[in-house]
Length: 619
Image 1 (cartoon, rainbow, N blue to C red):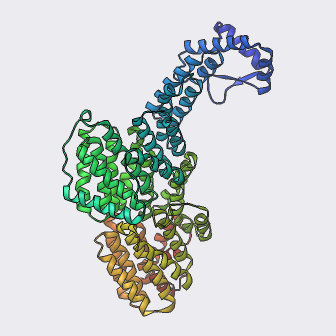
Image 2: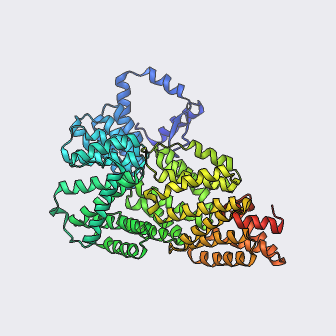
Image 3: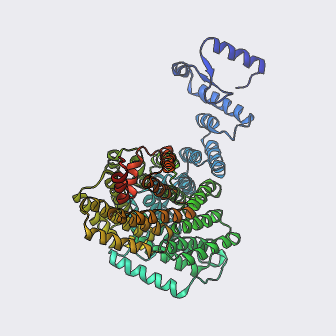
């Protein structure tokens, strides 16, 4: 471990000539044993004291070489030299530095080494277990983080138990581990003297009561310094926040109830960072319900609070609020750009994967509307692999269910159906929630792509009617999308039957969409009315509604639907210039991975696509 430079070079040359060592493939300046058997043979020849002495000498050499910032080898040799206490302290220091640098997976590895090396009782070990759990949160490894928080929970004081329990519940639920998460929530809420409403009806009454209180009191609040707020109140609001974030993923009504409770308590306490986050969530909630002006106002308020707060994640929350309002307003091109910026920002502000998952999901939702399906396919692969690595069932299942349209683009509808059959999920029984919606939407799209028979139409319409009976119907974009899908199914059936009753129902749905007062709903209504006119063989009216669709799409970045309408117009006009336009648009579709543009038209504009086939002989 300590020889002159010339002697070292001579020894290395000899070892390499004898094929005993070789340059490391992973570290440019390191050597490694040529074969593990060589190391084993040498190791067997050494006495225990000799091995410890050599490890100590190597550790000393590494310390002299200032290798503390690359601690793996130093930790290895210190531990085997019997210097476990020094090794534990070094691992803890290196883990802290890795966390500060955003290298969260490395921090996890180092904290685990520190725990293994430290000779501490349970109480003294708790700070290390908490640090490990928090690093796992930052790394997005929810199930492992939850288990680590529960390790720290045992034997802790009441306040620490509340913190650990709230974090464990949230991490289990947002990563899709429902049974463990619900058990943690029940235990957690008992500690703060409350409980989950026992039935969906009671949860709805509680939610309506909280929303009424919010409306009556308004969003006026008085800022108070953190030092003036009792710690128990801070813990209680953080419990409400954890329950809200966790349940929103799996139990929509009770999740919304605790979101409202969290907002009320945040305003009452007046701590600026927590108020800013509550305002951001409320802005997105209001936007999802269609209250867009009030939502935009709250998003601006969040931006103002960034300067007053000191939490590093507030700039990201301001961006999330702005992009959430943009998405629910139907400004999909702008939303995709904002969320790309937010995803680049999140590591520098130490966000958790709850924020990251939502940024990624809404980025994909927006890109679908824009028609940038090549980008969706690239991001889908990255996000699914990351979710699988982290054990995040919820993210993986949501991505696979929502992105079945990628398999339709590839003209593999049966593969898309297989995705849905394999993407199993076990939400709480007796409720219709987001995962049901994602699956129903995808199955309807697969059916429309293949051409549904009457039995499939009836079954899917019954499922979509269930959305109207659920709380999800209050989310405007889900309500609009469900009505659009109902109309598309009915149009697909009416192409075969020319049923006046079905067309009347489609017209009713189109009128309902027009009343929604968001551009994307009017886009859907125009395409649907073009379908009605096509079945009635009223070509001038078809062209009118298609051109209206194009005009509506362009300002909000709905490139997918604009190109669908352009392609239909060009196909119906049957002029030399329109033939070139057809070729140009279909080339754009293929560049985004769409293998059969005609079948895509049948999915998104069933009535007009059928007319196009009849009039122009397309297939």
